[in-house]
Image 1 (cartoon, helix red, strand yellow):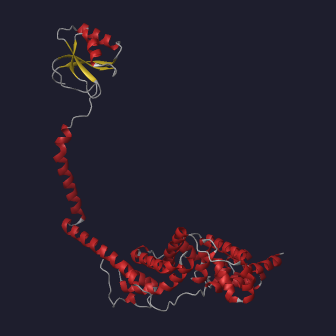
Image 2 (tube, each protein chain N blue to C red; image 1 turned 135 degrees about the vertical axis):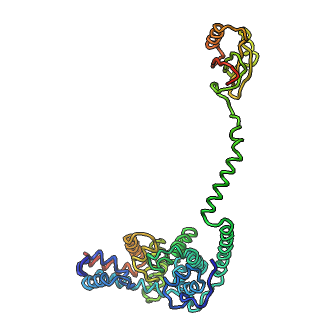
Image 3 (spheres, rainbow over the protein chains, first blue to last red; image 1 turned 30 degrees about the vertical axis):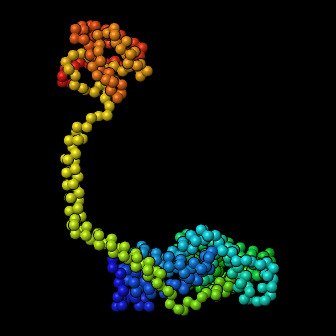
Length: 197
Length: 217
């Protein structure tokens, strides 16, 4: 099928809904694809950059993801949101890269923990990010999809192709692991234990 | 769940992460909030999750306001489209050539029939790769036995074994070691029967079967 570059394509407008754009991509509308690409690039790039063992490959994998979108647009059945479908592709690409190259682990300097807590929130954030890097890929994915991408647990279940309860369980374990890793959260957890008692 | 106030602590606690990212459905959101107002543990958990969210969201991403560079993906798509176009053209040419699918099916069937007719004589005339003891075989008029000797017997031993009989080798051995032996013309029927019976009991003889040669088989 010959690609359409037509400027008159209604689906090619910047404000067209995702589904309209994807339907046009299915019909090989390059302009609609460009709009979809520009729309998703920042989120996909940020998401992949956090997860990949080597963040410099984020650009390349965004292209891989969007190439699949172009190639397999006709496979989208419309049973989920377009964003869930696209992030599902990205999720699998990220997991594959993590499996191949191993997880990136930022150094977690225990000695610096106390200083960071004392110093304030910016260093807390640094520590939290280091803690995140030490989570398993599944746990990390749930946290990033929730807080960076803003997906609901139902959407995450679609993206990760797993039951909703699995998403909730992964989130539970991710939180528990972070509390174990980071005193800034564990300290509050101890208070919780006292409250429960 | 029928009403927000019925949400248990455990259910509310596991939904807290999505209350923080504001992705819960309206009913769930109200139920979790209602629970959290009266639950000190959930309120503390919410504060921790807010810290977590704040840590995740503002990662120092490069400036994404600029339009992303699409040259690489455009090149990949161009290559894919070129391949698809070439494939489509080939398919279109084949479609022009063969017409509709029924016509293709008819042509295929005709080709199969032509091939069958062309190769039928060869199939008919193909010699079997082996013979069996009971297989019909054209033999000149006379009386014969089909016989299988122990493979360890050599030609000299077989000649010795047949020396005392009115049998001579008419053909064989076949690929399976079957010899066809011909009785001398003047051998009486009773002698033929006695010789066959004797051969049955002769060491080195594995199988014996009398056969009539009448030019028809």
